[in-house]
Image (cartoon, rainbow, N blue to C red; front, side, top):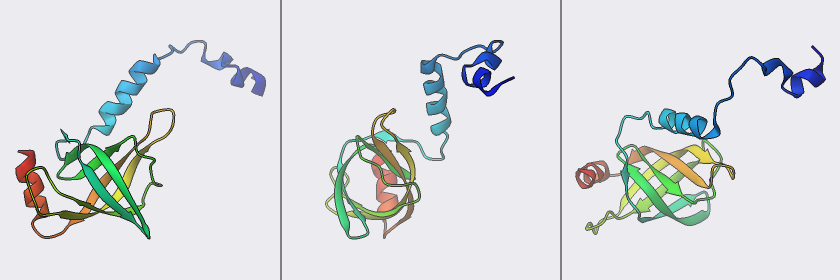
Length: 131
């Protein structure tokens, strides 16, 4: 088979094409495999990455991390410090996290951060709030 045939899709004649919507749903199901349940929650977090400070709006939060909607993502593996107050709580939660997912322009903008460590009783306060 020539390289022209391979690029034009000739070798795939016998395969069934999968709808884009189905592929997107399967990809999301795979991304939802996590230890902690996510809860939709919109709040602002201060994010410090190196010398840069950003203010990002969350889409959902869990004891294990946070997802930022409509955020221009950092590179995977970037370590950030997050500071935020949960609704009804005056004390700030301070957590360090690592960027573990990032959505490119085809999927929209967004970024998932997994908590590496949470200072003080922050994890307990997050857990209590999410219940």
